[in-house]
Length: 343
Ligand SMILES: [Zn+2]
Image (cartoon, rainbow, N blue to C red):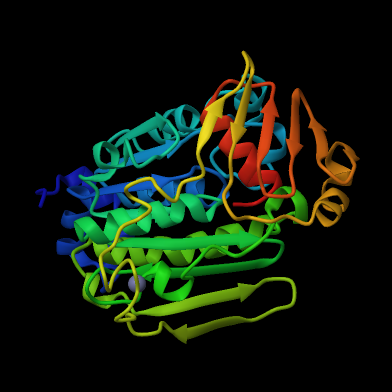
């Protein structure tokens, strides 16, 4: 715990007055450490909220750059960040320093992988999910269970959002609820759009659970799945299932995503192209083509679909494999795959 100064007492007075936190809760927050994986709409909300709340150390991991189409919902970023194509992790770190200069926020430009996850996340007391793909979420789930670190799952697309806390040893984990990643191409914010309000709402639900954990009140996190739809209306909370005894991750502790075997292999192909060899992920190319139609140039035959967006050209095969031309950066290639095909 950290002893508060008079300036801290003033700065965080509205939070200290809140009975659920109080002075002891605030002291815990000032000494606490959080990690945010993915700094898009959800992650940039988490980061700003935790910095304002006085969370002592905030690590932000993101593999992508700021683009103008992010500004509609990615709360931390400004036009100048997009104009400079700044990495999101760097833009976030700079912005957080202006929001609260007394907390330590660090941005890491990286693709979270089985190889670097222990270095990046071992120190975290909670991990917040700001990612857009199941591949990374399963990796976080395995790691968090193996190290007994709580993490909060969150996702939003269209007007819909979902959040669920995973407290190792107490609640169900992501694989209890989704044993395998949904088959085929999934709707993504790039193909189905997203309302900025739903990203804020679901990120706020995640952040509230994170604050309980960081304030030393993890027992207050209730094992519930929250879903909301801000267009149709309605927020629902249902009890999380109890941990499944035969869950491969939390039950049998077989952390296949952590050893990297389940991760779609990636290889550089040529000087400026990356191949993602997805496994067992049959795609309906006709359906994918019609979703991508409005986002770039689409050409398709029975064997492959070619999609051109900006300076990137993606060739997508029915087995889920893709060749992405226009980059030699594996993180960017994975990001494009997650955005346009869904992962
Ligand atoms: Zn489980």
